[in-house]
Image (cartoon, rainbow, N blue to C red; front, side):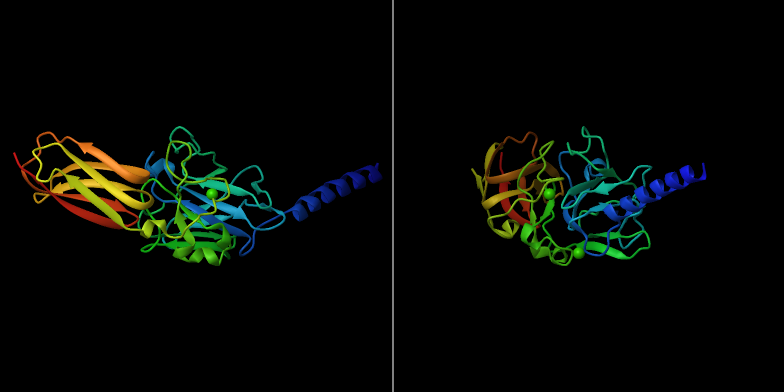
Length: 282
Ligand SMILES: [Ca+2]
Ligand SMILES: [Ca+2]
């Protein structure tokens, strides 16, 4: 009888030991932040923000107890009754919402709370349960942040040190789910060029002056995502629209009830703004 319990206990301990060896908790550099959706356009920020992480090791990692936080008050501990296992060399998407209808059409591996991404500057910090650092990314001015596209870490810089540099990140250019750009849960595409978002913009408006109807053409040296805004000296806003993955943008705009006078058309892309003057004369 005694012997039977001993065998049972040994078997349980052996199983526990195997699971400990097979799935360790991550240490510094073993997880890498590879993609960040700061400012979704197809869905709201409240539902559509997400972060992609990558297991850089040749073994599975157990993420229960992992902390995601910023330098401020955002703080979340990954919690589940089940084991949260990120396979070797695999990608996980940590997201605000697990509902594909409202989160932009992404498959999520984990849904967090109390963590939001500022559209201008913020930090994504991953630590172990004892707050020792695993990886962090601090983005801000000079980073490729636009509405409707994620920032993707260029694959050749896929390490926890290289992802600190803004020049190692690019705007995503391939659509997913509901139409925003990104590659959630998948390896980032190898890009042909660097810093497409820094390329120039050419904007033409004709006829100008216009009696109402006019054509707006914006030409980019590489496909771009961004926004168009039309404002006048009184601060009146007429159109506000976003575009994605466009090399030549051509819009026929037929404004109704537009106040005659000087209007400014702003094409905003990759943190740059091109302003063109338009006279409405009628
Ligand atoms: Ca880092
Ligand atoms: Ca990706």
